[in-house]
Image (tube, protein in one colour):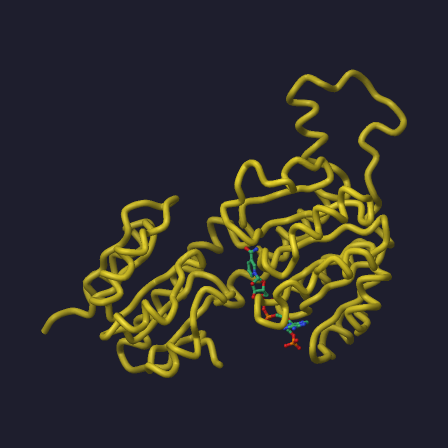
Length: 322
Ligand code: NAP
């Protein structure tokens, strides 16, 4: 009997794959840092029973139409905005993601980014390394306090709640906005539910952790940045397209807000000439929210487990539902 064919769209450690190669024929794209070209992805999708995909792979209608044998897409991310889930579902293809395993790691990064932006840590470290530190002075690299300030979490789901939990250790007031209330977070963390409008006007730190959907795309627009405090710091660890980057740039240049910490961008990788990268009050990271060795290994294992479950007719551990 021929083994089911699994294509992995990036190079991952072959050691991890050992037990799976007994059951599946496994092939992977040969580079870790370079995405698989579209033409090859289409070719592989046409043969594959399962695809282990990255958030940079566009799994659209064109691809799903050629993927005649495909039974499961296991995306190495909790977000699945790169996948046309309605079309996959219509074709009977199961879509899986990696929630939970990355929650704490991503929350750690979000809070680290908040701290780095508020306390100008990257700028300060660069000054020392570049030999530009000429001596102590009272206001040298003075940043913004974090403790006892107000954090506003837009998207108080698994990661948002875990960021808020970290904020309690800094004696912060916690506001949040979702479409529906997260009563557990209110009871556990003393978080207060509020409108988007009130959250953005009253928070010192506005942290976005919603999925990217038609509703959230561009929700941080010119009007939203104008309503924020001049001392506000915007942190985006969700997806780049939830913010209008031109409006964000304008708001930072005009001093309408004080800073931004960004792990995600509309176009990734962000070009080196992007205006946002010219600003000293922007801390920019290359989409590393869940990037710890332990968590990335956990995510890969979860994807492989999900593929095994679906191909053996069982319910996957983490399925994306419409
Ligand atoms: P989750 O548990 O599903 O939480 C998402 C939250 O967003 C929910 O509380 C949801 O509440 C809220 N939400 C959805 N639509 C909204 C809207 N229109 N307005 C306001 N709130 C809305 O997901 P999670 O595991 O915390 O992950 C959240 C997102 O983080 C992912 O989708 C992904 O894009 C991003 N992420 C990024 C990285 C990174 O490396 N930077 C890593 C992991 C995850 P309601 O449904 O009640 O609105």
